[in-house]
Image 1 (cartoon, rainbow, N blue to C red):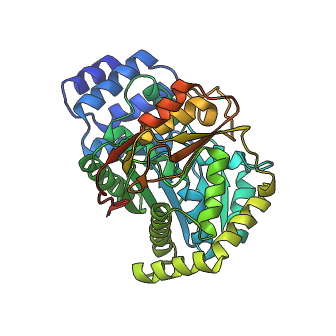
Image 2: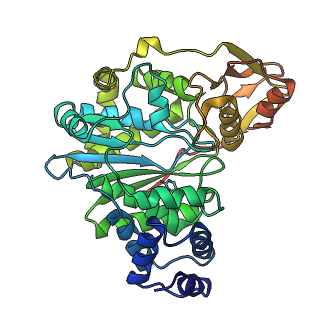
Length: 423
Ligand code: URA
């Protein structure tokens, strides 16, 4: 087999067969196919797409490239995944809710890359928190306490690691076939048979429009079916940051706010729905019964108890969360209803402050970020405080203006739905 023939075939929009796809994945992993050849094939896939059958084969080959976690002996296991957004701290809230109700949550999470955050970085902002569990400890904690979270155990889907790193630097991230196979291969290898995916769409997300989100959701459900996995996709708005806080330790504080009933309205609404979908799948109960249970878990405080229990078990000390040195108020230069807070601009701004990494080798400053004081549809007067930037150096005038540019105003309120569709 020859990689040049395969590239040409995809360039001419022809269908690759199973052995060609298997050859590509294995030969790239063992360095027989070079980065420049793989980049060329990935770009041809971006431009010409793949059939569902090609995508299912690609996903299977990626799963087979590494180890798999076997969770088949544990009952009621449910997983949750987010395609990534700004201020998205829902994983920690909804996993605590689901675990408090008897679901088994085996959570393997990632770090941040680019303007969106990663759950592992948020957890590492809690002094002492251990994010690397052995497979044995991970499984034992799930069995005993219903919930464990780790950066990764074992060598799961090495093909995705290598291909994703290349996609990141070759403009080939935004391809529905590649996104679907990348996400689903990791979920299949990590062993859960029930999965809730929060599929973000909008300015601060990888997927910019609802049609593409629908296509991706249907595809991930179809891949799930071929591996006997029940997948529910919740398509949600990511034009604006989620909640008030952006930045690692600030987001942990907001997780506590939601779990103690002081959360921002849309963030809380989304957590309740994602939690209900997890509980419905995990406990195999009716959707409405799941919604009632989830609300009770939050209101009674058992979800908050579960979160504190897991943090303590993994050595975290919430009382030692640190704060940034400078807190700079950002004041509006105009009046009106807030129409939009551009999630992409805010995410990028916080990343440049040190809340995220532009490349994998950079260190994160856990304390920096932003707290929004006003949100969509709030009326703001000129000179009123709309946000506070947390930083460990003084902000320049230019930076203050950069934050202001993320806000747009209108003379009237607008309809905004955080949850667009559940499929
Ligand atoms: N998240 C992933 O894990 N992979 C992608 O390709 C995109 C988002």
